[in-house]
Image (tube, rainbow, N blue to C red; front, side, top):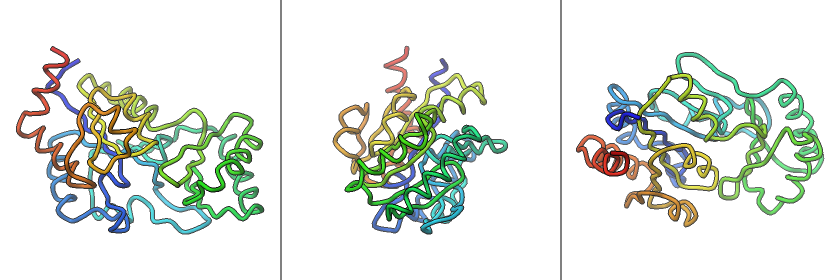
Length: 244
């Protein structure tokens, strides 16, 4: 492991993009991340989709990213990687399961949107038992539900953000230090597959508890704090204390 090589893997919602701004990244954050990404590794790891296939209209990550150009993207909670091409990590059977789950959701009045490999049912925590029972019944273990605060993401059981990171690292043959940045429940698997765990100042208590570093800043600003730590060598000092 080379402590001088650092890959930053950042969540999107409430980490890069503030909820109060409609999950659109601020201009100054885009500028700093784009500048950093020109000579460093910076990946966005998000549950958001590349495009909305059908259902309730949700803005895709590219509609919200405001011109962000990272090194690459891990989308739909780890089931799609955009780095030197497109890589889909789910089976054809799961895509069929998604269609039936969508039909069952519609019959039960559960509003939802469909991405390419994932179903989103925002603000459905009050329907958690029904939603999870439908997924279990249809997919027979091929699917699962992950929660991001009150929002449900229905995906193939063999994918999550952590596995997306593992696949990316294998593709790149990366041997350096992985720094993960997150704020909510679906970032736990992200944290489990990085070397340094960073929580935003607005992160839920569960994430702050397992983080190695808790930033003062919230969405966007907290990520820029991490970039400053890399530029100034402070993060490298922490890494070297741990691994050398």
